[in-house]
Length: 100
Image 1 (cartoon, rainbow, N blue to C red):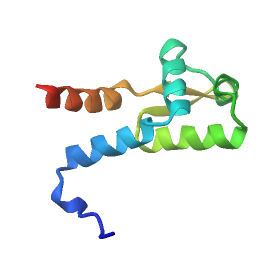
Image 2: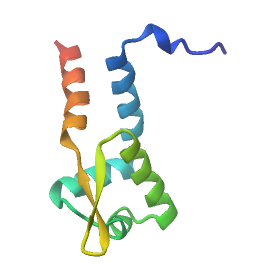
Image 3: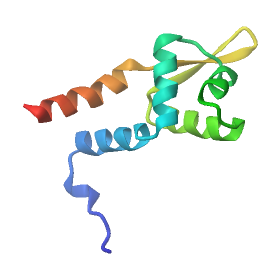
């Protein structure tokens, strides 16, 4: 197989593809849904929700953080996780424009 020529695509398309690639995992979608319903959950709470090991949950959270859809805040001696809805909205808006 040949190398992918990413330079031929717009930055918006590459960004949307990266977001969609990360969001394609059921555990990550479950994390996003949980944070939408309960903002500020701790990583330990999310580990129980997705029913995965600490390492697996941490990996999923790191991937979501790398694309900017979640952020950590240090509150009262522990970290809380929050959604960054603007990043998700950007990908959704792009996909909706493609429907028209």
